[in-house]
Image 1 (cartoon, helix red, strand yellow):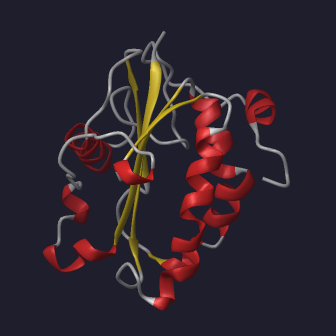
Image 2 (image 1 turned 45 degrees about the vertical axis):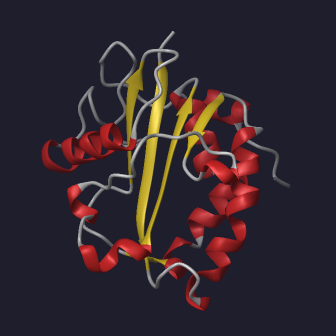
Length: 176
């Protein structure tokens, strides 16, 4: 059964460790723990010491490749059982609350904030793969190879919509 790979990316207003982004940094461990406990969660890639899997060398999409901003990039790469699970985690609970505050911590960038694509069960995506999919989305718009939650595709490659009832079933509790 296919799984959904999801990369999120943003440009912080200040470098990691700066007081301006401390509120974002202070939420990371709780957000990662909530993700790991979420229905439909399969895997997360990133800092191995923080529970992430190794997705190979960190590669960022061309839209984020400016050498002067590399200390301001925040990115995640995860795998989910389905789009509704990923959507529920992203827009509800503790992550949804952080997302609503994103303007406090992130600079507006003329590039997608996330990219999703379907992978075979058991496939472990790499950062290079994620960066390439992000570039496809940024250059050509949503397709079966690279899409966002506004214009999703199903695992068979057909344009679809997020099943809102399934999102409600997967949503974390309001206290999460």
